[in-house]
Image (cartoon, rainbow, N blue to C red; front, side, top):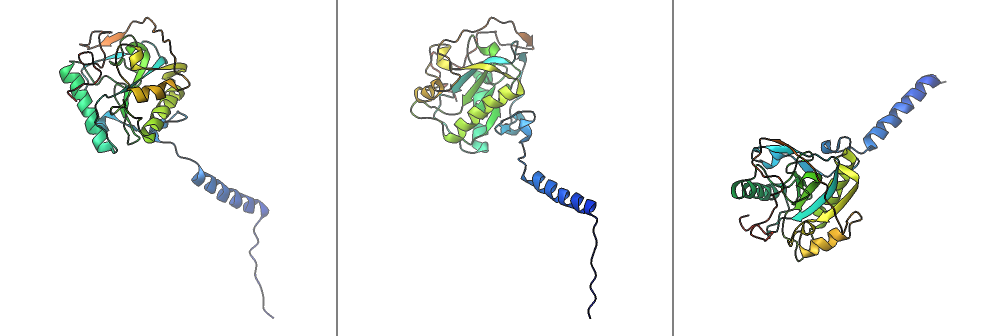
Length: 243
């Protein structure tokens, strides 16, 4: 006759063991937010200035209105495109060089730039006055998609990153939850953000046909940029040939 031995486990210990297994599986199954999205509901991948090898800015102005009531959409206006971080970073650097060396600005003009690699590139960032749309620089986040989109739209990766960036800004409290979207051409006589892309912008739920800028004062620190005399424009054309 064979003898059998059994391990007797108290019910309380068994429940603790089962709960631990369940908790471990739940943790493994939980989505992990990108580091750039801390505190935000949705964020695309945002490439830092250090990552794209930005030059040191020469000064800055803090946005006097935050969260900002406007998002201004641009295109680069140059038929130069990119599908990876290395080539997109090179284009962003060329924009910065043009704005600083040819325009005499203290940094790249846009708050953020979007590549067709699906990444967002930090320009002046969330908290600083841009140089991209006269009348709206002090009360908007200016976003530029790299390339010329007169004849066709940015690819799906760029459009997804653009929309996620706006949602991210709202979630972080940088963009008002009652914001309006406008195209650059609504602030002055220009083709920007390109005919095809502008049709897309007009279809966005927060686009407004009749934007009215607020009157604001800026807080300036080490600046050489004359306030409200800044716009990403060359000789009446939004396509900067130097890029």
